[in-house]
Length: 59
Image (cartoon, rainbow, N blue to C red; front, side, top):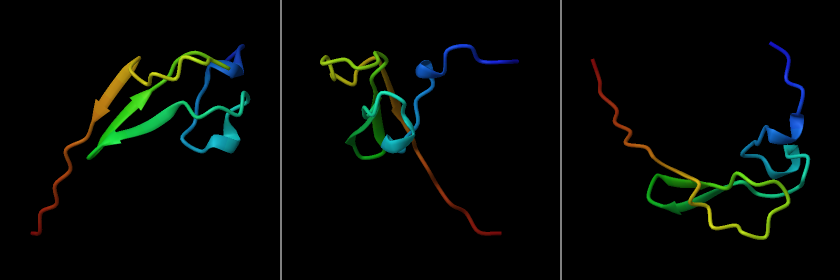
């Protein structure tokens, strides 16, 4: 599979995004909001919200 539009790929590392825009924002405890528009002034980070619940166990 070959991606034809690299501008639609967003990374957590700001410097890796071609539009130099932060597309992932920490909203709270283990809750991340995503912004889907390139070079957008919207920056509401509600296009997708992901909450992680992590746990560790020992054997």
